[in-house]
Length: 413
Image (tube, rainbow, N blue to C red):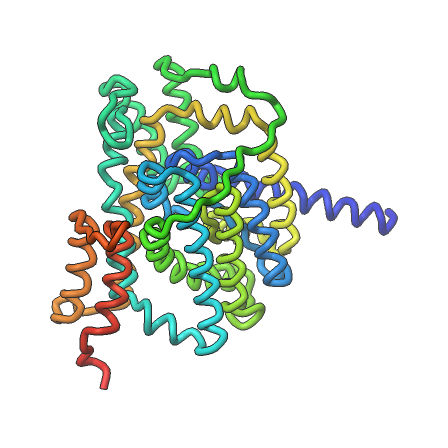
């Protein structure tokens, strides 16, 4: 066999492995735009482009795939309903720049600056607020209503049956699934709910018939909105902290220390620029995908070039118009069933960060920080600051950082 033939076989193998990695990420990747009203084809394009940009910045050393971040679902839904997609994208682009600022702080002061500004006693309750604040939307959709609960889209009895079936399959697959099946529980839940919806006669294929096979993704450019920036940027606190864990996780899988090389300062920079790039085109923020890390561990496919192929396949799929139209036909209760678990899981992640940190929450300082973040965020407290309003997740995040900095800490001499 010639050298050229061997190289071709390696490239073909990497391409197929890359397509498989995209398949693992696909369910979660398109879930965010489907839940938030963004365009799924744009999300595919920005996931691929964002991963390629990340690889350039980290010099192609890490086998990770970047795609739609769950942490931003709640603020995107609120932003789209309040300001529209273009102005929401302004806030998301600023969130990416927040990562960039953190990356330069790490370059100057090291990772301890992050531990000082964003300890678990702040990050944990902020993550909890993200999950809790949108929980009514999940329940409404599971019952066949619109996200705000004002319009019944699917008969409630039918909706509950379908949403609970989607939820049950997702949970079962995550607990009992083997191999690749355990890595795609959300995708399996959606497929099961979609099939049930077909039998129930609530799927409308009209958008698929009307959509062209090849079409330019519906890109959206941001419009300036300071209120959106102040609302969304604090949400970036949670995924910024999670970024450390993701980099450690893929390092433990491959046996390499990516915190040192290419360095957390560069991985954070890559993540931030990928998020801003996505927002500039109308896509959801990017984050490193733990599903793909699990697939890397399962397949032992440690070559970062595989993620290059996954990115190329994602970009190519973005131009298939009928794919986006087909995804838009997924009925509300299918997504609602998934969201019930998803938003609950986000809340549990926040709780777990407090548990792992072993904080005594009954200490007056910790109690005050956690209590004010959760109650103000979930309770709907807001402040009018001139022409804009600060409330919800944005208020919770900013309040947590400020309280942590100003309240005296008896544990520190």
